[in-house]
Structures are given as structure tokens and as C-alpha cells.
Image (cartoon, rainbow, N blue to C red; front, side, top):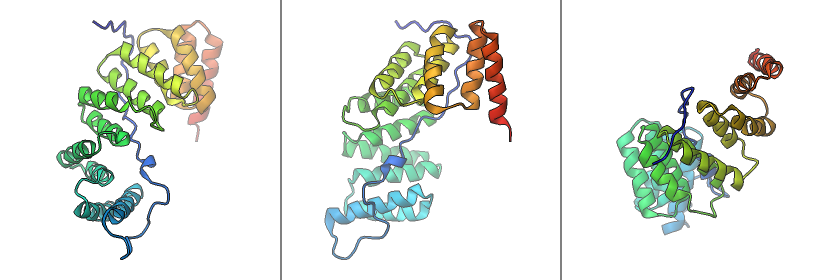
Amino acid sequence: MIGYGRRTTPFRVPVLTVLLGSLMLAGCATSAPTSRETGQDAADAYSQLGVAYLERGNLPRALNALDRALEIDPRHAEALQGLALVYQQQGENQLAARYFQQAVNSAPSFTRARNNYAAFLYDQARYREACEQLEVASQDAQYANRAQLFTNLGQCYLALNDVERARERFARAQSIDPRSPRGYLMLAELEVSQGNFERAWAPLQSYLELAGPDPQALALAATVASARGDERAAAEYRRETLDTQAP
């Protein structure tokens, strides 16, 4: 049995990070395949073209290019995931779920697709399923965005109120990439939510050092400083919070 500790403030449930920006492949096509491209090359080119349109927010053209890729190769995992993301943005959640599942079935080692499928499940408040997808994805030791993935996993466990597992995953993210700031802020928020103000201080300072001041982190720092009895620091953080919010 996992002990959840004392919650003094409700933990916010932010949106899980979708790794859309990393979808683009090196030398991504910006035009349709040429007549000399056939078979897998053409499917790859249409898929890359669809993703390029998706990243630019042109969903109709993205849909058309991705459909063309799947006409050539119905199991093209990148195109299946791209189509899922298009349908997700259009609010077609049943179609999005279907194509995400097809993408990970077609390529079980497609870690980015699992992360984005988990983000979709999380957005649908299907937290346990999202955590399951992320646990599978976290086993990919070669994945370039593994620290971000573990941060997502920690956030997912927080949504289930599984504080110990969340804390462990945030710590794992920090060990993989100590320069990635988001996990530090989420760990600090976790500790504040449990009333562990002393434990919140170090990750919060790491976040401020790496990411710089922002209103959310500064307001949290003021709360933590005050709880630690350092009213001078708390007042300074409140002043900085107002400065960052000034037009």
C-alpha cells in the first residue's frame, strides 16, 4: 500500500506535454513526392508532409497528405500517429484513440507515439491508461526526450494521487537530465501540496536557476519562503511576482 501523505493544498492537473515539435524528421519534405518516388519512400514523404502541415496548423492539408501516406502503407506508424493528432485537434476523440492505438500496435517501439497517446488519454481523464502507456515508453533507454517522458509520468501519477510514484519519476527525470527545468517545478509543487516546504525549497531553486523567474514559480517561492519563516525572502518573491506580471 502506498502512503500518500498529508495534502495541504490541491495539486493542479495541467496538460501533459505532447512531443509534437519533435515529430519533424531531418530534411522534412515540404512538397508532395515526385513521380520517381514509389512505395515506402512515397509513404514516408507524404507522412512528413502531413506532419509539416500539422505543425503549421493546416489541418485539412495535413489530413490529405497523411491519408495519401496510408493509402500507400496502411501500417505507416508515423502517418497513423499524425492522423491521430489531427483528429485530436479537431475534437474527433474516438477517431484519435483508434489511430493512436493503431500507431503503437504497428510499431510497439515508437516511443514518441506512446507519449502522445498518453497525453491524449490524460486529456480524457483516463489517467491510469495514460500511466500504463508512459511506463512502457519509459523503458526506451535510447529515447532522446526521456527526461521529459519521466516528468510526464510523474505528472500522470499525481493525477492518480500516487504521490510516492510521482516523486520517484520526477527524481528519475532529474537524474537523466539535470538541466531540464519542468520536473523541478512539478516536484516543488508536489512537496508543497504535501506540506513539505523544506523539501520543496531545493527543487524550486533549481527551477528558478534553470528557467528564470515566472509568476507561477515566484508565487510558489513566496509561499515556501513564508512557510519556512523567511518573511524577507517571501516579500521579495512577492515583489518579483508583481514585476513579472506588470505590462
